[in-house]
Length: 391
View 1: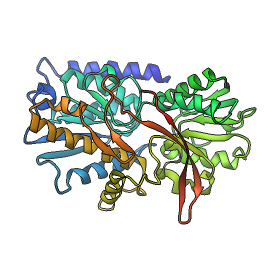
View 2: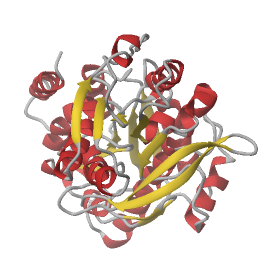
View 3: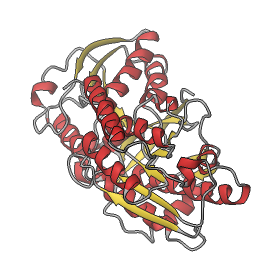
View 4: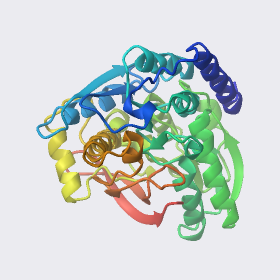
């Protein structure tokens, strides 16, 4: 099913779920729904996959956020609940509805699948309940008054990187190779726009379905290009990078993808096949030596989610939890609504100062280009350059 059709169906499903709620708002008198400040108790609900192709993400997000909310000095009265959506938009809607109607969630952190994020956003907006997307996801959340994203939207980095690739890196011909879902197409569309505007040419576009086991039929179509760009994450990233190397393509066309393609979350599973592959991202998982990054690394040593420390999912989970904590504190002290406090939160993320753009509802940030290298103890990232993200 094409991504845009899938989104339309998901949004329709959201409206059906809303209609089933009756005329009484499921948000009741809670801070998010009523515009009141954060109360003595705040329920945070996380919806993320712990199964399916992106099953790596949910346990990491949940483990880190639970650790942050439980640390000494955290605001009192935080109740943290998690639900597994398997990466499926319809399941995400069902789980969000449960968190809101049965568990009294004041803020929902969701989702990993971009289609799921877009599906739950109108439902939560109708109830006035804040939605925070924890990792990079789809664009367009700014049209929902209660939706914000700690992660960037794909074109925010891939459009300026497309221009950077043509003008600064000298690439002339590109093949798009990207997972066939909302995020994969958004990543590709941003790169195409920036690359072609700067004089580059797209010679072919290939979109393998999610959870593809054999990429051979797609890899065999790559030719007459000096760069291959796209998006793969989780188990798909592991298989794609390994098979790209096995097909002998690493010496023919530079493989570059949005950061998850070679994040620390998957590097150990990929192994040496990842050496030389490049990533475009907001955060280098080798660390930044900033006080916030040191605090993040120290915090991770006390938390044990099933992933290598540090990685971008942990960094974004940590930042999401920091935003929520800061908003609770600010809202209680100022008397402003919980949603207003979330929108105005300023924290120090592992990659630098963090705040939301008031109109787009996404973070203000710079982009990094890095390459996987063989370090003294493990595979690592070497930053090759930086560029301004689209704001």
